[in-house]
Image (cartoon, rainbow, N blue to C red; front, top):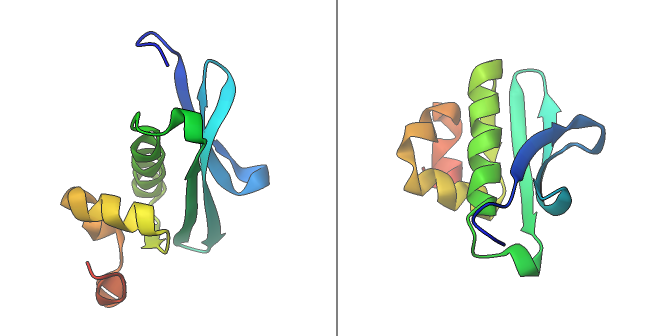
Length: 105
């Protein structure tokens, strides 16, 4: 991936996932499920050839920023997203206080 690669993260609600593309090619996704007031983040996957370039982090940030904008709580079942939140504690408040211990937050 070159430095001038076009990276886009977007919601694909018809597939219940956030997707990241690099120069128009699907590079990874973050699967989610929604319930009223809740966004459950289930699984993050980045194609092998795109790994190590921060795309998983972009997916996590996009999903969490979207949750904040939409005013919904987050349940980080995905181990990657859970670890990402631990490294970015400014997002812990999105996880309901009553659930934080379940996610070791």
